[in-house]
Amino acid sequence: MKRSRVKSVKEEGRLRRHRRLRKKVVGTPERPRLVVHRSHLHLEAQVVDDLNQKTLLGCSTRGKEFLKKSKSGSTTAAAKLLGEQVGQAAQKAGIQQVVFDKGGLLFHGRVKALAEAARAQGLVF
Image (tube, rainbow, N blue to C red; front, side, top):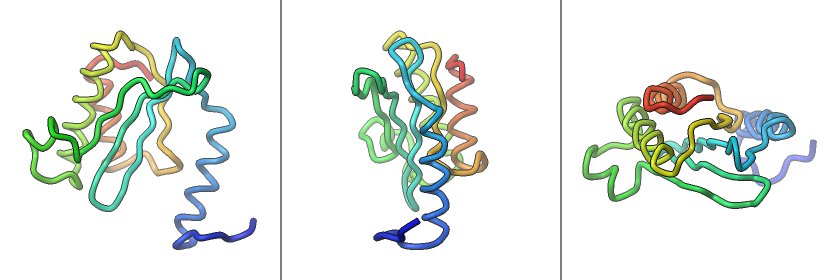
């Protein structure tokens, strides 16, 4: 694989895992894809319909609603709060089932906290 503007070998591995995962994980109108993006300081989650190429909803630790409830976006507590927010927004939009796309990240820490909180709100992965 040709190394492009990737910052580290770790990031290159994550991107390789994500490309491999995306061959199988596709969001449909009946079961959209819940995408998680984790940066150093923040988390973002979107529910995407890949067939129609539309983002159905999105939540972030940088959003106004989130910042009213929490000050930091880089903790597992913040991830749990964001997961609850995503779950509630999905329920309002009439979405019960999603496909979870962790973006090549390991399922632990903030990613796991977000997923478990979304499941607690009624989303089925």
